[in-house]
Image (tube, rainbow, N blue to C red; front, side, top):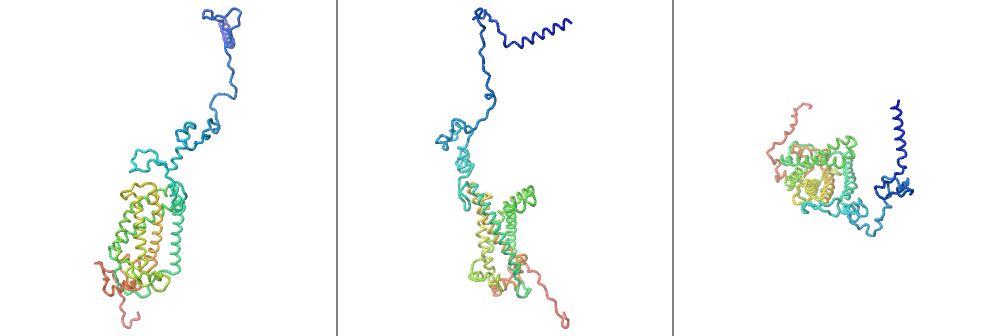
Length: 414
Protein backbone atom coordinates (compact mmCIF):
# COMPACT_ATOMS: atom_id res chain seq x y z
CA UNK A 1 0.00 0.00 0.00
CA UNK A 2 2.86 2.37 0.78
CA UNK A 3 4.43 1.61 -2.64
CA UNK A 4 1.22 2.51 -4.41
CA UNK A 5 0.95 5.82 -2.53
CA UNK A 6 4.55 6.67 -3.31
CA UNK A 7 4.00 5.98 -7.06
CA UNK A 8 0.93 8.18 -7.17
CA UNK A 9 2.77 11.01 -5.42
CA UNK A 10 5.72 10.77 -7.84
CA UNK A 11 3.38 10.83 -10.86
CA UNK A 12 1.59 13.93 -9.57
CA UNK A 13 4.89 15.70 -8.97
CA UNK A 14 6.17 14.96 -12.49
CA UNK A 15 2.90 16.13 -14.05
CA UNK A 16 3.02 19.42 -12.16
CA UNK A 17 6.64 19.97 -13.13
CA UNK A 18 5.99 19.41 -16.84
CA UNK A 19 2.92 21.68 -16.85
CA UNK A 20 4.74 24.60 -15.22
CA UNK A 21 8.13 24.02 -16.90
CA UNK A 22 8.06 26.76 -19.57
CA UNK A 23 6.78 29.40 -17.11
CA UNK A 24 9.20 28.62 -14.26
CA UNK A 25 11.93 31.21 -13.65
CA UNK A 26 15.41 29.77 -13.57
CA UNK A 27 17.66 30.84 -10.72
CA UNK A 28 20.72 32.50 -12.19
CA UNK A 29 24.03 30.81 -11.55
CA UNK A 30 26.48 33.37 -10.20
CA UNK A 31 29.38 31.14 -11.02
CA UNK A 32 28.55 31.43 -14.69
CA UNK A 33 29.18 35.19 -14.67
CA UNK A 34 26.77 38.09 -15.02
CA UNK A 35 24.89 37.09 -11.90
CA UNK A 36 21.67 38.87 -11.19
CA UNK A 37 21.56 41.61 -8.54
CA UNK A 38 19.59 40.60 -5.51
CA UNK A 39 16.09 41.89 -5.69
CA UNK A 40 16.33 42.68 -9.48
CA UNK A 41 13.75 41.08 -11.68
CA UNK A 42 14.78 37.93 -13.48
CA UNK A 43 15.78 38.42 -17.15
CA UNK A 44 13.06 37.55 -19.62
CA UNK A 45 13.69 35.61 -22.86
CA UNK A 46 12.87 37.60 -25.99
CA UNK A 47 9.34 36.84 -27.09
CA UNK A 48 8.54 35.81 -30.71
CA UNK A 49 5.18 36.71 -32.13
CA UNK A 50 3.20 33.87 -33.60
CA UNK A 51 2.86 34.14 -37.40
CA UNK A 52 -0.49 35.20 -38.71
CA UNK A 53 -2.83 32.56 -40.02
CA UNK A 54 -2.53 33.97 -43.54
CA UNK A 55 1.29 33.51 -43.42
CA UNK A 56 1.19 29.82 -42.67
CA UNK A 57 4.09 27.77 -44.03
CA UNK A 58 3.98 25.47 -47.11
CA UNK A 59 3.88 25.93 -50.91
CA UNK A 60 1.99 28.98 -52.01
CA UNK A 61 0.52 29.60 -55.54
CA UNK A 62 0.96 32.80 -57.49
CA UNK A 63 -0.41 34.19 -60.75
CA UNK A 64 2.24 34.04 -63.47
CA UNK A 65 1.14 37.43 -64.72
CA UNK A 66 2.07 38.96 -61.36
CA UNK A 67 5.65 37.68 -61.40
CA UNK A 68 8.11 40.56 -61.13
CA UNK A 69 9.91 41.77 -63.08
CA UNK A 70 7.39 41.61 -65.91
CA UNK A 71 9.39 39.99 -68.73
CA UNK A 72 7.08 41.15 -71.50
CA UNK A 73 7.65 44.77 -70.48
CA UNK A 74 11.06 44.53 -72.15
CA UNK A 75 10.79 46.18 -75.60
CA UNK A 76 13.08 43.41 -76.98
CA UNK A 77 10.94 40.67 -75.48
CA UNK A 78 10.28 38.89 -78.78
CA UNK A 79 13.89 39.25 -79.86
CA UNK A 80 15.28 37.58 -76.78
CA UNK A 81 17.43 34.51 -77.16
CA UNK A 82 16.59 31.40 -75.24
CA UNK A 83 19.34 32.20 -72.71
CA UNK A 84 18.01 35.73 -72.12
CA UNK A 85 14.48 34.44 -71.67
CA UNK A 86 15.61 31.87 -69.13
CA UNK A 87 16.94 34.65 -66.89
CA UNK A 88 13.55 36.31 -66.49
CA UNK A 89 11.23 33.34 -67.10
CA UNK A 90 12.93 30.07 -66.24
CA UNK A 91 11.46 27.19 -68.22
CA UNK A 92 10.06 29.38 -71.00
CA UNK A 93 11.62 28.00 -74.20
CA UNK A 94 9.46 30.02 -76.58
CA UNK A 95 12.44 31.60 -78.44
CA UNK A 96 13.87 28.17 -79.25
CA UNK A 97 10.57 26.77 -80.52
CA UNK A 98 9.91 29.94 -82.48
CA UNK A 99 13.17 29.37 -84.33
CA UNK A 100 12.33 25.70 -84.80
CA UNK A 101 9.01 26.65 -86.38
CA UNK A 102 10.76 29.10 -88.70
CA UNK A 103 13.10 26.38 -89.97
CA UNK A 104 16.26 27.68 -88.32
CA UNK A 105 18.99 25.07 -88.55
CA UNK A 106 20.50 23.97 -85.27
CA UNK A 107 23.72 22.15 -84.57
CA UNK A 108 24.33 18.63 -85.83
CA UNK A 109 27.53 16.60 -85.94
CA UNK A 110 26.45 14.95 -89.21
CA UNK A 111 28.03 16.38 -92.40
CA UNK A 112 25.80 18.76 -94.31
CA UNK A 113 26.50 16.96 -97.60
CA UNK A 114 24.97 13.76 -96.25
CA UNK A 115 22.29 15.14 -93.94
CA UNK A 116 21.41 18.74 -94.84
CA UNK A 117 18.26 18.65 -92.71
CA UNK A 118 19.75 17.02 -89.62
CA UNK A 119 19.54 20.24 -87.60
CA UNK A 120 15.98 21.12 -88.68
CA UNK A 121 13.05 19.80 -86.70
CA UNK A 122 10.39 21.67 -88.71
CA UNK A 123 10.69 22.60 -92.38
CA UNK A 124 10.65 26.24 -93.52
CA UNK A 125 7.53 27.89 -94.91
CA UNK A 126 6.57 27.14 -98.53
CA UNK A 127 3.46 27.40 -100.70
CA UNK A 128 2.76 24.36 -102.85
CA UNK A 129 0.08 24.57 -105.57
CA UNK A 130 -3.22 24.38 -103.71
CA UNK A 131 -1.79 24.96 -100.21
CA UNK A 132 -1.52 27.93 -97.89
CA UNK A 133 1.77 29.54 -96.95
CA UNK A 134 2.88 27.30 -94.10
CA UNK A 135 5.67 24.91 -93.20
CA UNK A 136 6.43 22.38 -95.92
CA UNK A 137 5.11 19.38 -94.02
CA UNK A 138 1.73 20.99 -93.46
CA UNK A 139 1.64 22.31 -97.04
CA UNK A 140 2.22 18.79 -98.38
CA UNK A 141 -0.55 17.45 -96.12
CA UNK A 142 -2.98 20.09 -97.42
CA UNK A 143 -2.24 19.26 -101.07
CA UNK A 144 -2.63 15.53 -100.46
CA UNK A 145 -5.74 15.60 -98.27
CA UNK A 146 -7.56 18.53 -99.87
CA UNK A 147 -6.74 18.03 -103.55
CA UNK A 148 -5.13 14.75 -104.61
CA UNK A 149 -7.28 12.42 -102.50
CA UNK A 150 -10.79 13.90 -102.99
CA UNK A 151 -10.42 15.11 -106.58
CA UNK A 152 -8.44 12.03 -107.61
CA UNK A 153 -11.16 9.76 -106.29
CA UNK A 154 -13.86 11.84 -107.99
CA UNK A 155 -11.98 11.76 -111.31
CA UNK A 156 -11.60 7.97 -111.26
CA UNK A 157 -15.27 7.61 -110.33
CA UNK A 158 -16.34 9.79 -113.26
CA UNK A 159 -14.22 7.71 -115.66
CA UNK A 160 -15.75 4.47 -114.39
CA UNK A 161 -19.22 5.98 -114.60
CA UNK A 162 -18.66 7.13 -118.19
CA UNK A 163 -17.44 3.64 -119.20
CA UNK A 164 -20.46 2.03 -117.53
CA UNK A 165 -22.89 4.42 -119.23
CA UNK A 166 -21.33 3.79 -122.63
CA UNK A 167 -21.41 0.01 -122.15
CA UNK A 168 -25.05 -0.12 -121.10
CA UNK A 169 -26.17 2.28 -123.85
CA UNK A 170 -24.05 1.01 -126.78
CA UNK A 171 -22.87 -2.43 -125.72
CA UNK A 172 -19.63 -4.00 -126.93
CA UNK A 173 -18.24 -3.35 -130.39
CA UNK A 174 -19.13 -6.42 -132.42
CA UNK A 175 -18.13 -7.72 -135.83
CA UNK A 176 -20.40 -6.84 -138.72
CA UNK A 177 -19.25 -9.66 -140.98
CA UNK A 178 -19.07 -13.38 -140.36
CA UNK A 179 -15.75 -14.88 -139.18
CA UNK A 180 -13.83 -16.65 -141.93
CA UNK A 181 -11.97 -19.10 -139.69
CA UNK A 182 -8.62 -17.96 -141.11
CA UNK A 183 -6.31 -16.60 -138.40
CA UNK A 184 -3.74 -13.81 -138.44
CA UNK A 185 -1.06 -13.60 -135.76
CA UNK A 186 -1.48 -10.25 -134.05
CA UNK A 187 0.91 -10.73 -131.11
CA UNK A 188 3.89 -13.05 -130.85
CA UNK A 189 4.55 -15.00 -127.62
CA UNK A 190 7.26 -12.52 -126.63
CA UNK A 191 4.94 -9.57 -127.19
CA UNK A 192 2.21 -11.18 -125.13
CA UNK A 193 4.63 -12.03 -122.31
CA UNK A 194 5.87 -8.43 -122.26
CA UNK A 195 2.35 -7.02 -122.23
CA UNK A 196 1.09 -9.39 -119.50
CA UNK A 197 4.07 -8.77 -117.24
CA UNK A 198 3.46 -5.04 -117.52
CA UNK A 199 -0.30 -5.48 -117.02
CA UNK A 200 0.06 -7.68 -113.93
CA UNK A 201 2.59 -5.31 -112.35
CA UNK A 202 0.31 -2.36 -113.10
CA UNK A 203 -2.73 -4.05 -111.50
CA UNK A 204 -0.74 -4.91 -108.36
CA UNK A 205 0.55 -1.35 -108.05
CA UNK A 206 -2.86 0.17 -108.80
CA UNK A 207 -4.75 -1.96 -106.27
CA UNK A 208 -2.16 -1.46 -103.51
CA UNK A 209 -1.97 2.26 -104.24
CA UNK A 210 -5.75 2.67 -104.17
CA UNK A 211 -5.98 0.87 -100.82
CA UNK A 212 -3.21 2.99 -99.32
CA UNK A 213 -4.75 6.22 -100.62
CA UNK A 214 -8.48 5.62 -100.26
CA UNK A 215 -8.78 2.49 -98.10
CA UNK A 216 -9.36 4.40 -94.89
CA UNK A 217 -12.64 5.69 -96.33
CA UNK A 218 -14.21 2.51 -97.74
CA UNK A 219 -12.23 -0.44 -96.32
CA UNK A 220 -11.26 0.56 -92.78
CA UNK A 221 -14.87 0.83 -91.49
CA UNK A 222 -15.60 -2.69 -92.80
CA UNK A 223 -12.58 -4.76 -91.71
CA UNK A 224 -11.46 -2.75 -88.67
CA UNK A 225 -8.22 -1.03 -87.73
CA UNK A 226 -6.16 -4.13 -86.85
CA UNK A 227 -6.78 -5.98 -90.11
CA UNK A 228 -6.57 -2.80 -92.15
CA UNK A 229 -3.20 -1.92 -90.61
CA UNK A 230 -1.72 -5.32 -91.45
CA UNK A 231 -3.21 -5.27 -94.94
CA UNK A 232 -1.87 -1.82 -95.80
CA UNK A 233 1.58 -2.71 -94.45
CA UNK A 234 1.68 -5.83 -96.63
CA UNK A 235 0.44 -3.93 -99.68
CA UNK A 236 2.96 -1.15 -99.11
CA UNK A 237 5.79 -3.69 -99.01
CA UNK A 238 4.46 -5.39 -102.15
CA UNK A 239 4.12 -1.98 -103.83
CA UNK A 240 7.75 -1.13 -103.14
CA UNK A 241 9.03 -4.46 -104.52
CA UNK A 242 6.80 -4.62 -107.62
CA UNK A 243 7.58 -1.00 -108.57
CA UNK A 244 11.06 -1.71 -109.99
CA UNK A 245 9.66 -4.70 -111.92
CA UNK A 246 7.05 -2.39 -113.44
CA UNK A 247 9.83 -0.06 -114.57
CA UNK A 248 11.63 -2.92 -116.33
CA UNK A 249 8.41 -4.01 -118.05
CA UNK A 250 7.81 -0.43 -119.21
CA UNK A 251 11.20 -0.37 -120.90
CA UNK A 252 10.48 -3.70 -122.62
CA UNK A 253 7.05 -2.45 -123.69
CA UNK A 254 8.56 0.62 -125.30
CA UNK A 255 11.25 -1.32 -127.15
CA UNK A 256 8.81 -4.01 -128.30
CA UNK A 257 5.98 -1.84 -129.63
CA UNK A 258 7.52 1.53 -130.53
CA UNK A 259 7.92 0.68 -134.22
CA UNK A 260 4.21 0.09 -134.82
CA UNK A 261 3.12 3.09 -132.71
CA UNK A 262 4.71 5.81 -134.83
CA UNK A 263 2.13 8.50 -135.74
CA UNK A 264 0.62 8.71 -139.23
CA UNK A 265 -1.96 10.80 -141.06
CA UNK A 266 -4.50 8.02 -140.64
CA UNK A 267 -4.44 8.70 -136.91
CA UNK A 268 -5.87 12.19 -137.40
CA UNK A 269 -8.81 10.81 -139.40
CA UNK A 270 -9.35 8.16 -136.72
CA UNK A 271 -9.38 10.80 -133.97
CA UNK A 272 -11.71 13.06 -135.99
CA UNK A 273 -14.33 10.29 -135.96
CA UNK A 274 -13.59 9.28 -132.32
CA UNK A 275 -12.59 5.84 -133.50
CA UNK A 276 -16.12 5.04 -134.60
CA UNK A 277 -17.33 4.75 -131.01
CA UNK A 278 -20.46 6.70 -131.85
CA UNK A 279 -20.83 5.57 -135.47
CA UNK A 280 -21.51 2.41 -137.39
CA UNK A 281 -18.01 1.73 -138.74
CA UNK A 282 -14.54 2.10 -137.33
CA UNK A 283 -12.15 4.29 -139.35
CA UNK A 284 -9.29 2.34 -140.98
CA UNK A 285 -5.99 2.17 -139.11
CA UNK A 286 -2.69 0.37 -139.14
CA UNK A 287 -1.68 -2.33 -136.61
CA UNK A 288 -2.45 0.10 -133.75
CA UNK A 289 -5.05 2.82 -134.02
CA UNK A 290 -4.75 6.37 -132.69
CA UNK A 291 -6.37 5.45 -129.37
CA UNK A 292 -3.82 2.73 -128.75
CA UNK A 293 -1.03 5.08 -129.77
CA UNK A 294 -2.25 7.68 -127.28
CA UNK A 295 -2.12 5.06 -124.54
CA UNK A 296 1.36 4.07 -125.68
CA UNK A 297 2.88 7.55 -125.89
CA UNK A 298 0.86 9.26 -123.16
CA UNK A 299 0.58 6.35 -120.75
CA UNK A 300 3.59 4.12 -121.30
CA UNK A 301 6.14 6.77 -122.23
CA UNK A 302 5.21 10.11 -120.62
CA UNK A 303 3.19 9.13 -117.55
CA UNK A 304 5.08 5.85 -117.24
CA UNK A 305 8.41 7.68 -117.14
CA UNK A 306 7.12 10.18 -114.56
CA UNK A 307 5.66 7.42 -112.40
CA UNK A 308 8.80 5.29 -112.69
CA UNK A 309 11.13 8.18 -111.87
CA UNK A 310 9.11 9.46 -108.91
CA UNK A 311 8.53 5.93 -107.63
CA UNK A 312 12.20 5.00 -107.76
CA UNK A 313 12.95 8.28 -106.00
CA UNK A 314 10.46 7.48 -103.22
CA UNK A 315 12.10 4.05 -102.90
CA UNK A 316 15.47 5.84 -102.66
CA UNK A 317 16.85 3.79 -105.53
CA UNK A 318 18.17 6.63 -107.68
CA UNK A 319 21.85 7.49 -107.11
CA UNK A 320 23.17 10.98 -106.51
CA UNK A 321 20.32 12.29 -104.31
CA UNK A 322 20.26 13.13 -100.61
CA UNK A 323 16.46 12.56 -100.35
CA UNK A 324 15.44 15.49 -98.17
CA UNK A 325 11.92 15.79 -96.80
CA UNK A 326 11.00 18.54 -99.25
CA UNK A 327 12.18 16.51 -102.24
CA UNK A 328 10.27 13.45 -101.04
CA UNK A 329 7.10 15.51 -100.60
CA UNK A 330 7.33 16.93 -104.13
CA UNK A 331 8.03 13.45 -105.54
CA UNK A 332 5.02 12.06 -103.68
CA UNK A 333 2.68 14.72 -105.09
CA UNK A 334 3.97 14.15 -108.64
CA UNK A 335 3.66 10.39 -108.19
CA UNK A 336 0.09 10.64 -106.92
CA UNK A 337 -1.19 12.90 -109.69
CA UNK A 338 0.52 10.97 -112.51
CA UNK A 339 -0.70 7.58 -111.28
CA UNK A 340 -4.31 8.80 -111.10
CA UNK A 341 -4.07 10.08 -114.69
CA UNK A 342 -2.49 6.83 -115.86
CA UNK A 343 -5.12 4.70 -114.11
CA UNK A 344 -7.88 6.71 -115.77
CA UNK A 345 -6.27 6.19 -119.18
CA UNK A 346 -5.65 2.48 -118.62
CA UNK A 347 -9.25 1.96 -117.47
CA UNK A 348 -10.42 2.83 -120.97
CA UNK A 349 -7.75 0.60 -122.47
CA UNK A 350 -8.78 -2.32 -120.24
CA UNK A 351 -12.44 -1.81 -121.17
CA UNK A 352 -11.77 -1.96 -124.91
CA UNK A 353 -9.40 -4.89 -124.50
CA UNK A 354 -11.88 -7.02 -122.55
CA UNK A 355 -15.66 -6.54 -122.66
CA UNK A 356 -15.70 -3.45 -124.86
CA UNK A 357 -14.69 -5.13 -128.13
CA UNK A 358 -15.44 -8.65 -129.26
CA UNK A 359 -12.25 -10.59 -130.02
CA UNK A 360 -9.82 -8.08 -128.49
CA UNK A 361 -9.10 -10.16 -125.39
CA UNK A 362 -8.55 -13.32 -127.45
CA UNK A 363 -5.93 -11.46 -129.46
CA UNK A 364 -3.82 -10.81 -126.35
CA UNK A 365 -4.53 -14.16 -124.76
CA UNK A 366 -3.93 -16.44 -127.75
CA UNK A 367 -2.15 -14.06 -130.12
CA UNK A 368 -4.47 -14.53 -133.13
CA UNK A 369 -7.45 -12.76 -134.64
CA UNK A 370 -9.82 -13.67 -137.42
CA UNK A 371 -9.44 -12.08 -140.85
CA UNK A 372 -12.80 -10.38 -140.44
CA UNK A 373 -11.70 -8.81 -137.15
CA UNK A 374 -8.48 -7.51 -138.75
CA UNK A 375 -10.32 -6.11 -141.77
CA UNK A 376 -12.99 -4.28 -139.73
CA UNK A 377 -10.81 -2.87 -136.93
CA UNK A 378 -7.40 -2.40 -138.58
CA UNK A 379 -8.04 -2.18 -142.31
CA UNK A 380 -4.65 -0.75 -143.31
CA UNK A 381 -2.83 -3.45 -141.34
CA UNK A 382 -4.98 -6.12 -143.00
CA UNK A 383 -4.30 -4.65 -146.46
CA UNK A 384 -0.54 -4.81 -145.82
CA UNK A 385 -0.87 -8.48 -144.84
CA UNK A 386 -2.87 -9.27 -147.99
CA UNK A 387 -0.29 -7.39 -150.08
CA UNK A 388 2.49 -9.46 -148.51
CA UNK A 389 4.20 -6.50 -146.81
CA UNK A 390 3.61 -8.05 -143.38
CA UNK A 391 3.59 -11.81 -142.79
CA UNK A 392 0.39 -13.24 -141.37
CA UNK A 393 2.48 -15.59 -139.23
CA UNK A 394 5.47 -13.96 -137.51
CA UNK A 395 6.47 -16.68 -135.04
CA UNK A 396 6.99 -20.42 -135.09
CA UNK A 397 3.95 -20.90 -132.91
CA UNK A 398 1.11 -22.79 -134.56
CA UNK A 399 -2.22 -20.99 -134.82
CA UNK A 400 -5.14 -22.35 -132.81
CA UNK A 401 -7.21 -25.08 -134.41
CA UNK A 402 -9.75 -23.60 -136.78
CA UNK A 403 -13.30 -24.89 -136.54
CA UNK A 404 -14.25 -27.13 -139.45
CA UNK A 405 -17.78 -26.51 -140.76
CA UNK A 406 -19.89 -29.67 -140.99
CA UNK A 407 -20.18 -31.22 -144.48
CA UNK A 408 -23.59 -30.82 -146.03
CA UNK A 409 -24.91 -33.95 -147.77
CA UNK A 410 -27.26 -33.46 -150.69
CA UNK A 411 -30.79 -34.22 -149.67
CA UNK A 412 -30.03 -33.91 -145.98
CA UNK A 413 -32.24 -31.19 -144.52
CA UNK A 414 -29.44 -30.22 -142.15
